[in-house]
Image (cartoon, rainbow, N blue to C red):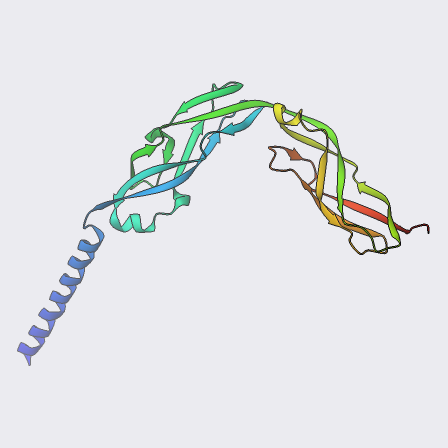
Length: 215
């Protein structure tokens, strides 16, 4: 009986040792590398200025670390921060290296590509411009479009000076009145056409008045 218990205990100890050894092997069997495309983040942009454009929005970061930790690495864990201190209006070329990358402690940066970014800065300005509702289609005959009213009729926009100065009005997304025979009130978004501007409202209310036409 004692021999059986001794053997049983020995087997249990051996099993535990094997399990621990396997865990250490899996956990520390070596390092691996991974390439991650990370978006650029900007800080310390000079007061009264903003980014008009940049030649790249992401960089490829080659990260090295223990294999187990690398399996858990996500794009959101990698931050590439560009310090804009000392930059000026116009084009700025800023170097990128390992110091720009923030990673979990157990990992390190092998390389980053590309190694620079061109950023164009412009003054931030604002102005008020009218909003023009964009109406498409025609009412049911014999009805006709009598009036269009947008509320608010104008919005304040903010953005890079060179962009804001080009804008004389902002249109809305289209409102189709095909086949209508009565008045229409609709909330509709502003159409910025990809412009780098920020309106103080994102949508307006448009009232379309439809009347019976004269014979």
